[in-house]
Image 1 (cartoon, rainbow, N blue to C red):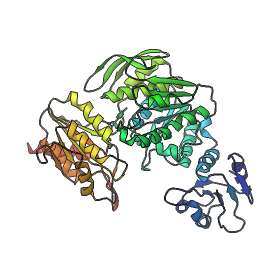
Image 2: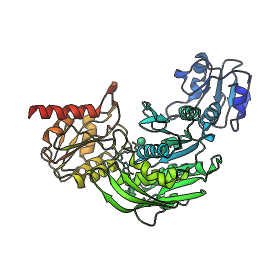
Image 3: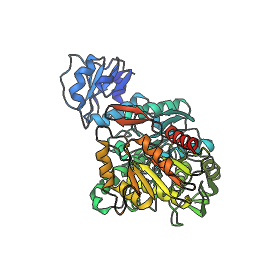
Image 4: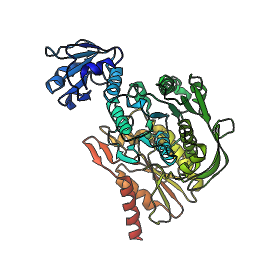
Length: 497
Ligand SMILES: Nc1ncnc2c1ncn2[C@@H]1O[C@H](COP(=O)(O)OP(=O)(O)OP(=O)(O)O)[C@@H](O)[C@H]1O
Ligand SMILES: [Mg+2]
């Protein structure tokens, strides 16, 4: 694409120097510049791209986008934009031909359940005859063909988002479902996406001591509604799908948008279940929606998956899946890898792998497994290096809701795993170490220990790693496979008995 043409589509951009150069890619990291790229000098949190603009040109960038003057080799074509952060989104969207205008786009945000809702909606769309694509923590999916997301980010940077959307358009996808984190919303990674649906799971915790933070967090998430309301018109009504049973509902429902559908377990919600029955493997209910009813049998356990199904149903209805297709579509969904994924080698106790790595998610996973556990509920978990996680809260959740638990390691990076475990342990009260819980820093040993102590009828929850394929250590990423670890522990136990 010629720089001149690219510049024309970017709001507020002015071109200095020749626009008659061919741009063959977009880069925002000078170390990854390829010959022919346009380098966008984003001022990030850790580094300011303006300092690396010269390096980028030396590495082959044909032009540079900046928000303030920098020293560059003479005759370097420069694109001046009001902000390089928002500029990156606009430039990437323009470079890939504004793909989000050629398909319906649903954004899914919230604290828990985003990935599940994203893939549930993708599945129901496909089953309902709407060719779908998805981007999530777990995978990028185009027409059902999955590429594992190894980026370490749920919502990748704008150029990748736009590139995947382009691939979807080229593959004939009619609707893309994008898992959208609040980080991505704050950092404008999905700025130049023309959304049609903004779907919300739950928002955060009920600790009012964090009130200000929670409001900020909610505000960041609420931007998805504003983006949707402002997105290009594609002939369907812009819709917000909101959880009526969540404390976020009151504020989110005040945001202006053409159509608002609430979902929840009571009849006050637009989308709700009737005659709900739950079992160890799933649930059954009649789904009431503003557009009619459908019978649903869910093959994924836990009450939160009923919520996720209601949310996914709202997304699919909004983009035109007939209501009678929703039930059969949901019935065929067999879960997301690493989300309450059962490991069943015929042993007489249950083992589940789950990605829950926050206090709230750990609590809800344990609460869900309890009613279907005849014996004891055993948990293995740790806290990651990311400091925004409530470590004592995880300890408290396990102490409150498990019969026995093992605190272990989960992506410690440069932090000392023993220190992290101590933070987690500080939230544990009224429990005796050795009897009610143990600290086993080595995760492999922790899993083996939990499987070893399990008795018939017990449930073992291995929380935190889920689908991930690496353990983030100080030395870098080491391969990790939670399922393989669990299976080998179960086999060894069986072999010894
Ligand atoms: N609607 C929900 N409400 C509360 N907890 C949920 C809900 N859905 C899923 N969970 C719990 O959270 C875990 C993570 O689910 P999922 O991966 O779908 O969430 P996510 O929002 O994508 O998480 P992340 O922020 O890590 O990407 C699940 O395994 C389950 O334990
Ligand atoms: Mg996710």
